[in-house]
Structures are given as structure tokens and as C-alpha cells.
Image 1 (cartoon, helix red, strand yellow):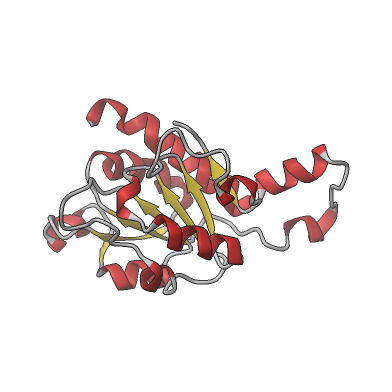
Image 2: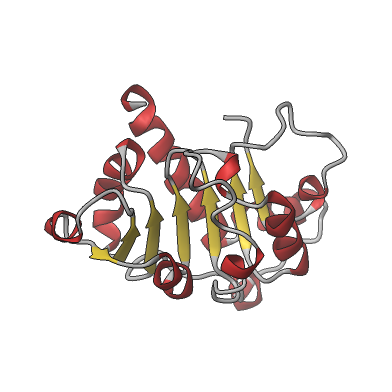
Length: 188
């Protein structure tokens, strides 16, 4: 709820920055003595500044995250079927369909609360709409995303993901996401 909004929003932003700049991969390479220097070390990185960002849900988490994104001057699209588009526009965001948020976002924050209607609302076909190299940050409820489809998409290298909520907790030690470099995981 509201008590954790700021802390989770800061965590979500940190995870997005880590994914966008390739920080986890660079750290792992350096620890193994396989670091890469110069422009090759940043070939898959991108700036959050001025990036297209999408929010799925604009409740407590979204309201806490939005001010943190302001210094980056992102174009923020939001999909929240419970809120009027005019109200969302007053916050400076672009009210959008889920398809548009998925297709246009370099960083997608999944922040919605779970309801009976939105279980696995982001499945394989939705993940396929995301641009190659985009980042999905899942910090609200694991049930919003088809976790098998997310795992397959990240494993293929099409997108990057940051996750701090899981369909099963504790998260199984044998889950394939644990072995991938394009993922940031946290037990929140």
C-alpha cells in the first residue's frame, strides 16, 4: 500500500537504471575477470533520459514513481483502465491502451494491483509487442505477468527484466531466470 510506495518506487527506478545501463552484466564480467572497456562495454546500454516509459497501473506505486522520473524528462504513457484519461493527462502523462504502452516503451513498469480481471494480462502476445532490448520492471504482483512467457522472452534475449515478486516464493533455486545475465532479481 501507500506506506511502501516510495521505497518500492525507488527500487523500481534503481532496477530500471541497472538494466538500461547494463550494470549487472558489467559487474558479473568484472568479477570473472572478463570485463570489457570502452564503447564495446556500452553497446547494449541506453539512456533513461528522454526515453519512452510505460506504466501499467497508476496507483500508489505509480504516483510515487512519477516524481522520480521527472528529472529524466521521459515521455510517460500510462495504461490504467480504472482512471479517466483526462485525470492522467493532468499529471503530464499520455493516457494509452495497453498495446500502445507495450509497443512504445523502452522501459515498462508493471505497477498495477492484482484483480480477477487482470491475471496474466501481460502474456506472450503482449510481450511480443515490446521493442527488442526493452526493459520490463515487475514490482507489484507476479500474477499480472505470464511468468513462463516472460522467462522465454528474456531467455531469448529479446527483452531485459527486473523482478521482485514471483509466482512462487521463495523463488525456486532451479528457475532459469536465476542464470540469465539480462535479469535483475530481488527478494524485496
